[in-house]
Image (cartoon, rainbow, N blue to C red):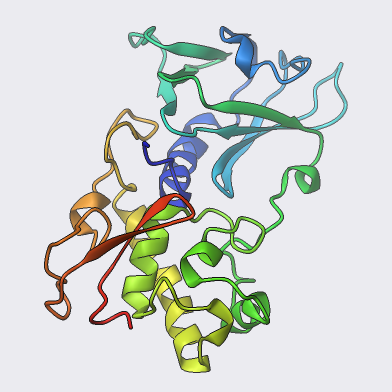
Amino acid sequence: MLPVPELPEVETVARQLQPRLAGRKVHSLRILDARLRNGRTPALRGRKIRGVRRSGKRVLIEFTAAPRHRDDLYLAVHLRMTGRLLWVPEHAPRRTSHLRARFELDRGTLLFVDTRRFGTFEWFRSDTEAAPTGVDPLESGFTPRRLDELVLGVRQNAKAWLMRQDKLVGLGNIYASEILHAARVSPLREIASLTSVERRALHRSIRRILSRAIENCGTTFSDFQDARGVSGSYQSLLAVYGRERLRCGRCGGTIRRIVQQQRSTFFCPACQR
């Protein structure tokens, strides 16, 4: 199974698109793949793009009201396995292979390309409606005390809990393994059993691993590319993910792979007891 873009990859795309799209007026949206037509596609002509940001694992594009359309509009784009949002400046060559949707703007074009057609478009009428249910681990509201509240009484292993989008949004298989290794927490450990010291270590690791991955434009194993068509580079810094039978760089132990919830988990039994 191909890795799905997680928080760092989606954050990378949103940050790159924001300065290029903010303030641009939409001339047209042409959807070329019927799978992206989630109900009736709203009219965009005349609206401006107010901004682009990440919402969980989705890229959220906000459109202003227009003379004929009084309400703001939000488009949540889930890239899934092979989806890409690519910015094309004016007069630059346009990619046509696997093109699923095209936004014509007053200056430049935004393309949605998706080889395997798993990506989705979802439209919302308000910021609140578009917001995910879980806590964003990069926002100021995610404090050590908030983490304490989220894990209280939860009888679930640490790896599975980190991937619960109703608790923390944006984390998936790759970064869950990396975060637990950085915090020296076993993926098999019941999350509510962590001590106060261990929870603080987990909180620090979540922030540090995600921030460092964003600095390196995310992780690319096969298909992920950013808004410029460039692959991420964090895969060269991974401590455990994909490193089965190799030595742990911290303690010298042997990295193991186990299966949890039908997904591979990588960890070092020597320093994640």
